[in-house]
Length: 381
Ligand code: GLA
Image (cartoon, rainbow, N blue to C red; front, side, top):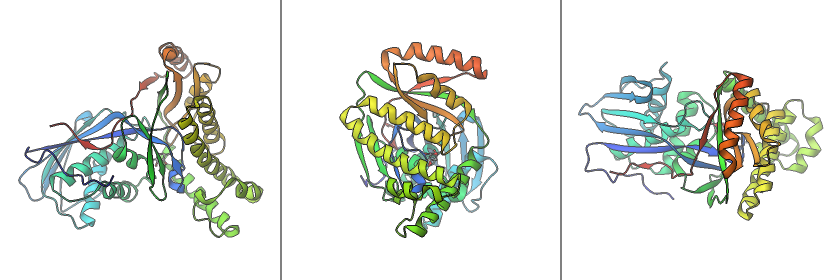
């Protein structure tokens, strides 16, 4: 689907674009290792409304949920301390580097993707904003161009070394479908998620530990170190994606700790994604649940990106027959768990686990029942 992101609203004096947050069924910390992920866009979104303002250079942004404004000039795009604005400025910066020209505009941003909930509100913002600029200034970019610009904006301008999963999913999501994405080639396929009387439940810990950003970058470096060590023995290895189970087993004891465990997580997680794709197609939810638990244990013990709140929520489900599987979702150190739960039991389960969570951590638990939605698009006129 390399459709041009042009506007059906050209006759209006403004353009309104929505871009969704995402979940990830399985495949965590594999994207920046060139591996596989199984995400889906959800029915929570960021909406950008944009209009030209007659000026050549002056622009304004209004973040409605935060009640904050930011004014700037197109001729002076620099990273700001007001961090939310950087997602928009980063996209403009990338478009300017491509030699694309824009004029003054006013844009407002609002949405319901929970900030810090691990559902990628930042990717949703970047993608809806990039898409809106592309439409209003007729920049002629395709979806893949916007994905690549958003990733460069996030890595180079915002300074987060994230992989491609969140941005790709926000732009390319499809209602009722999950995406099997090869994060190296960007080959992808959709398949329908049919869970019968089961459903996906998100539980937001409502914590976001400060360790998250530094640990994320450290993990990336550890993976690169690991890939480099494998490459000495197996010259064809460029990324951990190229390491298979047999190579891992034969080389594991020679790798220093924690590099060995980081590599084991990535290699086994890639295998889990591939198996998950098969078992979901077969409707084998029992096995899907087992893979989710295995993913969580690996993220907790080998990759060390979980936290007590996430571990508590996953552990609470282990002996509940109505839950087939559960795991932390996203980068870690907070955000949500994702569980596969028997729909009729959801309400009572949520009530009980929220009570126990509050007793243990003095924190509210926020449940979300999400539907799988389409990727970036125009709001109906
Ligand atoms: C964050 C990043 C993604 C991905 C996940 C972990 O959400 O933005 O690129 O690495 O963490 O799977």
